[in-house]
Length: 265
Length: 302
Image 1: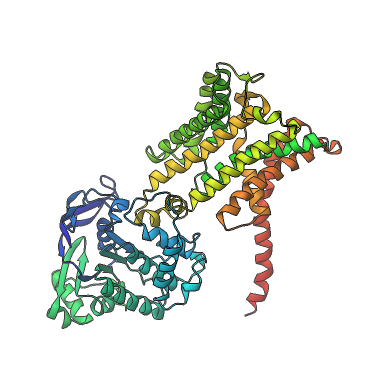
Image 2 (image 1 turned 30 degrees about the vertical axis):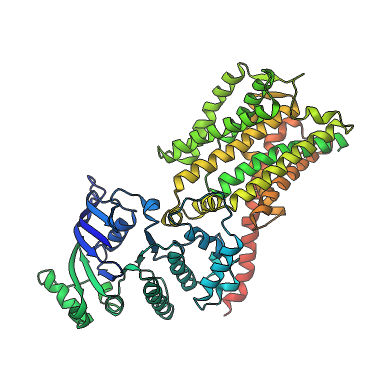
């Protein structure tokens, strides 16, 4: 369970470029819930995810994960609780290391890393089985460098890596945005399967309203650093993209949305 | 080249192989251009020489030299990680400071080791010529270091260190404390360099504050030569490449200096080294450019 209480984040405080990216976000996400997050560019989606992951420390407010206050924890410390997949397929894995080395890195998430071999034969066998389940034929390419994989394959492996250490929270930051539509669909289906099989509490940022409604149990819309829409259950089931746009406009006091990126997809 | 000159080149190549491995660790694995080695090499030599004169066991003296090198590395890492000074500048600051430190350690610009026992002493009486004993002993030490380091880099800790250099953001997201790995890696790199300095002092019979000048370039030259002759992806082989590169580099230098017709003399060493490294850095680019322009023409027809 994630509890977020009134968090504020400001970038470049005291400079002409000061940006109040999060202005008091309050949120409770129960265990196992799959939340999709939408919002226009600069709405604070990525900052919000970053503040959960520890990349951005909230200057005000409180974040707790499974009852532990993690507000002041940095990224490596939170990594035992939180797994992530980034938008850029290159960002979430080490191109110069092999697939199995990347997996070994992820498997040790949240543990002390000692001088034991990173890749024993037991662990190799386990990795082979896990990656075979992806159905991409990667089980015979464990020794290949990660950089040789396509963007979609890398995102698929990144998703798998997110499950290796048993953390219960998954943060997805537009993880299909850099992929072609067919590959994006494959990765989204894989996401759905992995989230369900591992009962992960998931936050998925997306720029597509369609995806936001089709996947998950609950949808949040951020605007100017605040949650302006929070729908779940029947209310959400009855929503379609035009409804969402209208709701958004209403929330914003009748202001028309002019950002194309919200409408596309 | 005489036999003595040949073994001399191999010997000095093996001593500097430890520097090459250290440089590989900082430049290649951690992606941290660290010039501290110019100071930690003579620091290792100085510490070892002073301790030997004080009657300390040669192995302990060598260990102390490695620890002194590690401490120097930690200073650089602290300046960079803790105080956000650019890595290159941080290492230059440490390097400059070490020049004074080394003078303090020795109390004078150079120290001669004449009658002191060294790690080599027990092996001199075995009936093998001295000029072969030295590279043999140093070679065994280098082999042990390569084996230990290869094992270290394939451990969970070592893997995290490699990830730190390749993609620090990903490493942090996987729970790797990247700062700690920079500290550890730069300390280890300079510990190896300090050990190389200690072996240099013991094989050559002296320690001198000026021996550090250009250490980084020599180390880098060895790494680059090694990568050229042994373009291996496997880590253990890359380390062996550093050793091979260091020896080949010394042989090339020895060859250039002993060929009277070229007219080079010993004092031209730094110039030759700089030119060699520059050429080795430029060549792959030219080669890539050439192959790009060749492959471009057929693909443009599509």
